[in-house]
Each structure stands twice: as structure tokens, then as C-alpha cells.
Image (cartoon, rainbow, N blue to C red):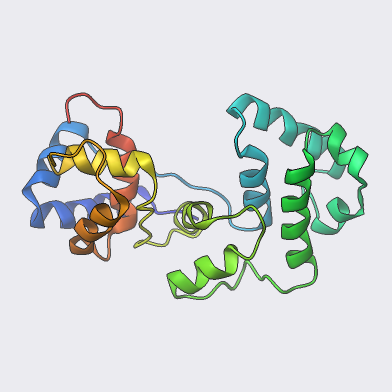
Length: 206
């Protein structure tokens, strides 16, 4: 499960104690709510389903998949379905390829989502073996599902923009390299800072 409210609050308090600009932003914005997903294959499948479509469209496809495969959505059951069946559920040819890549790795045991490497970069490397799961999706999984406290998705545009605002940078959208460098001082609490960045993204007062 993801970071709890208590973990987020404690982490942000610790970073704010070292950085006045974060303390100011925290005072204005308040603490973010946890973002928690279940661990395991279904969360990654749902990530694939949701890529490049609206929330409503993704929810519709997911409901059809549940109706076809059952709530557990066993990886072997998805692999047993043909192209037209999955197409009728709303999965494009490309997304079927991504879903099958995930299911094959899970079904043959070569990807054990219950025992990902403890090292974050090694875990990201494992997850990005799945077609359609890039670095950002892997980071989101490790942060929201596994609750890894130092995940820092510096390539996320909302995170970049929020860091620019929070840290009062001249650049409205600082580049990933800058955002990554700034966050070094926030270790080992960059996960909570990422959640805080999304929390403040649309706040005019920050």
C-alpha cells in the first residue's frame, strides 16, 4: 500500500524544517491526502487500460474487462482470450500487446510483483520490462502501491511546474535535470514531496 497520512505528514514536516520555501508552501496548501493503490498485477493492467484515454473511457473498458474475465482478472484468463474478445472490451491492438506482455511475465513467473528488488532503480528496471510501462508508470506504481518513500518522478510535468512554484524559481517549468538536482536535498522523503507537488499543482496561492 502507499504512504499513509502519518508518513506523509512526518516526511513533509522534516523537509520543511530544512527548507523555508517548503515550510511556506505547506502552511498555505496544507497536507495532501494519501494516494494508495493495491499492489499487484491488476494495478499495472489498469495503468495500461488508462493510457491516453479519459478517466470515463478507462472506467468503461475496465468494467467490460471485469465482466469478461471476472473481478480477479487472472492473467492466464486474459491470455486465453482472442483479439476480437478483448477488442470488444475496448482494448486496441497496441494495448492488447501491452496487456499480454504484462500477463505473460506474471503467468510464467518471470515477474514477481510480490518480491520486487528493494533497490528502487532495480525495481523500476523490472517493471519497465513490461511493454507499455515506462519509467513514469513504474515510479507511480512503486509510490502509490508499494509506498516507497524516496520515489521521485522528476519527469512528470506537474511535478516540474509545482517545484518551480514552491521553490520560487524564475523558470515556470524547470527541466527534469534541475528538478532532480533540487530534490537531492529532500532525500529520503522525495515520495512525500512528489505527492505534495501534485497537491499544490493547481493552487494559485502557492
